[in-house]
Amino acid sequence: MSSPDRSRRHLDDLFRALLRLHKALLDDERVSYERVHGRIPSNGAFLQLALNDPWFAWLRPLSQLMTKLDELSEKDDPSTLEAISALLASAQRLLIPTEEGEGFGRQYHEALQRSPDVGLEHATVRALLKQSVQKKG
Image 1 (cartoon, rainbow, N blue to C red):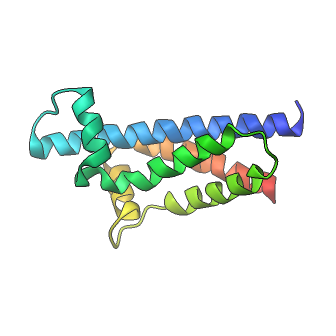
Image 2 (image 1 turned 30 degrees about the vertical axis):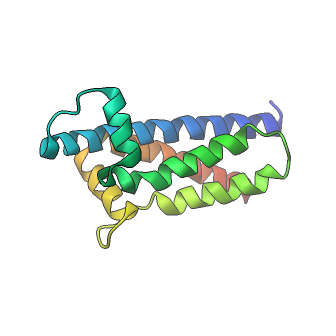
């Protein structure tokens, strides 16, 4: 397999891992939301909450990063490699759980503490991101 093919496959693997992490986070957050507000009646209602309700706002940076990564991975333009590298660096910074403060890092830390599925997907994404950095360096 050629180097560009390996890079494309690695990027696809990373994107799929990010999707699984995002889904695990959404599933975990849905459970938390429903404990407070009651059952969400449908997947459509859940989608509207995920997109618009402040409860889910902390997940939006990850959603936006994944959207940008997906858009860039569709392009065959070599200049997108630098943009993809920048996004991968952003992903590494974003996916650092923190016990203090507010925002994504804090909420991410709490989700990692609550959900084994989030923990498993986090480990997979971190390993793939680490490989990305090693390939670049």
